Structures are given as structure tokens and as C-alpha cells.
Image (cartoon, rainbow, N blue to C red; front, side):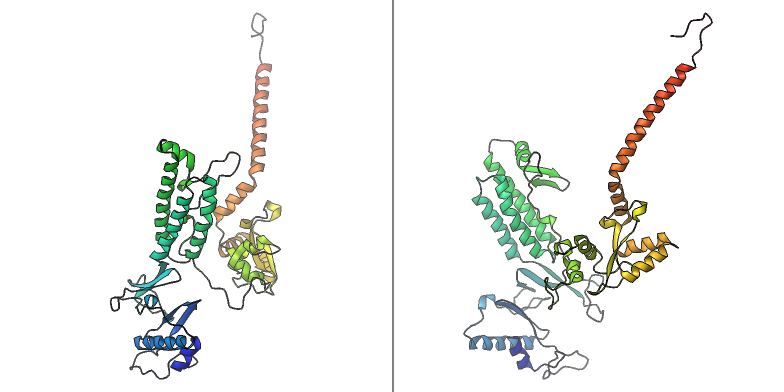
Length: 400
């Protein structure tokens, strides 16, 4: 299909249409862009005539192999303004893609850093939000007489999978809406099981109160409680970086995959993978990216002789030659080099102090115990001294 569009329009190597006239001052019209996944596809073009011709080419191509476009799922729409009673934007793979007019402070920019006057927002489609909530609702209706632990174990994978799929886009509003609807549904589930119990008793029986409010969970003595995931627990509007086309988790490039996956990438040194992800694959000294052939070494911000530990907040990754330069500069200006490494590795001083306090927790406890013992012995010695200086009275009797 992609080849049929390219041959029909006769594009140049840069993707510009050859036989498409343009007015003076206007930019060249590019070839239509086709994004396809399985049997779903979208064709994007900045020119309406090119887009209508693309539809004819696709229909001809599909008719030759015995297929045709489904009229109910085929739309010709604009991403910014309404077009022929069609609302702006379109749905694709569970997302709603639309552009909105905004001011200059929120406007998007083109490759030349010029303001566009609009901003593209991708968010979960209303149909998929309703389908996800309906799936949770049907699961609860089928499990009215099932134990709470079984309900949580059944719902958690559903919530986790849907939220991970929607997390790279603007999903915070959808997360909040589904979370509130699910909470009401869980309360009705618990109220139905105990119609004669009070609200306080039901809340204590099926819900836990944590720092984020009420959460559906079990109270298991001696074990970690089993809790239901909230949609708000997952990040929204996260930056998604596409995997390069020639990459594979089995190619042995630890620098690339550790930067993307962290400790989830199976490697011989999980701590190194975590540090690479935190530093985004860059050296904390020179700021250049690590290459597959580079020798990467760990550097202690606080030396082990001074009480530093092998924790993530006390370690940064450096090139071999950068490590030698950093060690040489530590002798002249140690504080300046340490602050530079912390800033480049994105380590806050508060986290460093917190890890140091947690690492010396046992040591501080022992020191407090020693101080308490010393204070008691000191008090007792002072009492003995006060008794030893007592003098007899004038009658010769000792003071009682």
C-alpha cells in the first residue's frame, strides 16, 4: 500500500510531490504519510486534493486483492477544525488525536522553531475508556460472592495493562474519572455483602487508609497487605522514546537497553543498569553518551574510607579517562567536582544525606546507647563524690 501511494504520486527522494503546482511563497507539498498497524491505518496530508486522491488509490489497491474499506470506519476529517459536519480529530488504536488552538506560550513549534498557533494533544478515546470501565464492572458483577483477595488478584492485571498502554499520553483526566467510578463500584460490592453493617464497619473491613486516601485492600496480620492498584498510581503524559529499528534486547548492547529499561534488563550488574537509566546513558563528568566499546567505571561521591557506601545515591558512572581526571581534581577542589558529578547525575543533596542517615542508622543507635550508659555512670560517680565530702557535726555524729 505504501509503495502504491509513492508510485502514484511520483515523489522525489525528499518526499516532495513532483506534479503538484504551488503558489509563490508557499512551501512544497509533501507526499501523504501512511501509518498502519494490522488492518487499521491512517493517511495524513496537508492538502485536501492529495488526500482525496489517496483514498481512491487505496480503494483500487484493496479491490485488486478482494478487500474494501468499511464505510462506517472511514472518515475524512481535519485535526484542528470541523470539516463537513465531522468533528475535529480522529481515533486511532484507542487514542483520540486532535489539535487545539492555543496562545504563543503554549503553542507547538515546527522544525525551524516557528510558532504553529496550535498544540497536538493525544488522550484516551471515550470509547476505550467506557470499554475499560465496563470490563471492570462486569468482573465485579461476576465476583459478587468471591473473596476480596481473589477480586484484587483479578483486577490488578487489568488495571496495570490498560494504564501502561495509556501512560505515554495525556491520560491524567481519564485516570481520575475511571478511578472514581471504580471506587463507587467497589463500595457497592462491599455494601451488598454486608447490608446490615454500618459504613464504618465496612470501611474498616475492606479498605485501608494510607497517605493517598482510602484504598481497597486486605488486612493480613504478619504479611504485607494485598492492595488494589489505583489508576492514579501510574504516570501520565510520560515521554516515550521509540526503539530504534535495528535494536533487539538480545543484541548485547547493555548501554542502550539499560538506559531504557533500568534493572529490568537482565544483565550481570543490575546496579549499573539502574545508574545508566538515571543518567540517561551519559557520563556524569563529561556529559557525553556511553558507547558500546567504552569502559565504564563506578565512582564513589563519598569515598569508602570516609564512610561512603555502595548505594545508588553514592555512585555515578564515568568513562575510564574521565574517572582518572575526576580523581586528580579531587585532590585540588574536591567539593566542586563532587557537586558537578551530583548535578550531572541528577542526584539531589537531600537524597544523599537521607541515604547516609539510613546507612548509619545502626551506628547512631549504638552511639546513643553508649552515650546513655556514659551519662548514667557519670551521674553515679557524682553521687559518690557528694557523699564522700560529708563532714561530721559538732557533736561528732555523722549526718544521716
